[in-house]
Length: 301
Ligand SMILES: Nc1ncnc2c1ncn2[C@@H]1O[C@H](COP(=O)(O)OP(=O)(O)OP(=O)(O)O)[C@@H](O)[C@H]1O
Ligand SMILES: O=P(O)(O)OC[C@H]1O[C@H](OP(=O)(O)OP(=O)(O)O)[C@H](O)[C@@H]1O
Image 1 (cartoon, rainbow, N blue to C red):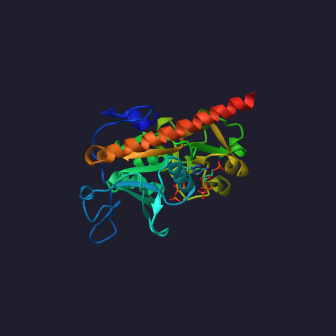
Image 2: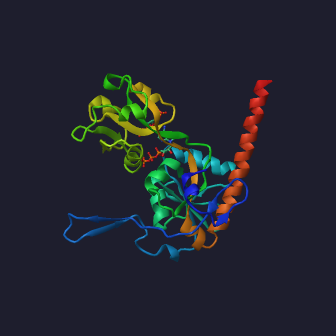
Image 3: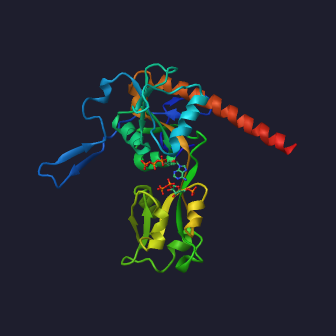
């Protein structure tokens, strides 16, 4: 079960293997720009009207990238057809769910918009929820195992040089090289989870740099000593002479259904719609699992 569910005391409970919900308040993140003569406030959406003014239930789905096609496939398998009027538009409907509006967004923006109250539900990777949700308990993992998008957020170091005989986080932490003047340099896109993980694991002398991709190049370029990035097959690490280490996995991730706790409690119909989606997901995923077990036994015979 997800860390969010473990943290939150349940108020509402769904039947079957699914989730529990409880109440609280959402936080709108605000960035103040200090260079401008009069400060500019940047909010993550919802500037025109209060989110409580709308009546539709909004579901955010990944607009492109790895998760997009698999998410639509899963919904289709649950007999939920996502109908886009125009492929260039970011809005769609699911006729089987009344009052449902689908919005296609980048995964990190789905999380931001759940927090700002501009979305009620979303499907993204657990890594994205954890990184961009930053522990905000308005985010509830309604289903924590949609069985695609599997990967792990993992620390990796070079196989060569001073790291040749280092195979665990403990050994990495005990290397005498890391000092206040010369800290361990980690390249990552996970600037919330990275520092949190290092602190929790007692690594004191660490600095972080960030980039939007191709992080595996950073050690060979001399920019970083280690990287913290998503790994699935491990091919990219191997091809770049990097290795994972024992104790270096920050998070195991797969696609999840996330809900805004505030929406579940305050917005009419969200709880029922979530329940309906969960029942369809469970029915489909149980059928897939049973099919997989049958195939397994068939292969054993
Ligand atoms: N090998 C992998 N590498 C990266 N992400 C993976 C991998 N396998 C599964 N995923 C999942 O896919 C998601 C990445 O999807 P995608 O590349 O579309 O988005 P993104 O990189 O977060 O978006 P953006 O381009 O806006 O930064 C990850 O958050 C993770 O949940
Ligand atoms: O373990 P693997 O199966 O090799 O997958 C891991 C790689 O995939 C992702 O990068 P992506 O392909 O999204 O490109 P990016 O580096 O530009 O983000 C991730 O950031 C790793 O680099």
